[in-house]
Length: 79
Image (cartoon, rainbow, N blue to C red; front, side, top):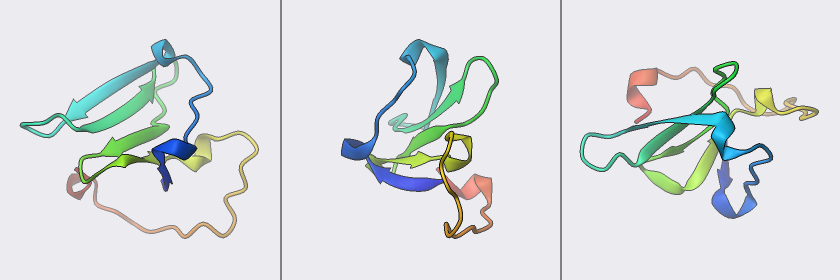
């Protein structure tokens, strides 16, 4: 995932091709989006930084990932 400000984000597919999972007990502000066809997880908005999207750059066509740091994460700590 690469963090991108919402003003720099452009969705190039229709919103109806995505499904959304919202969570955080009280606010539902953590939002994760998935492709309805293949199930890939292309992007999300975290509760702690709602003005930014986390973009799964590995599902972008023609995007060069060389030089992007990779770090291991524990999913339960990503709310």
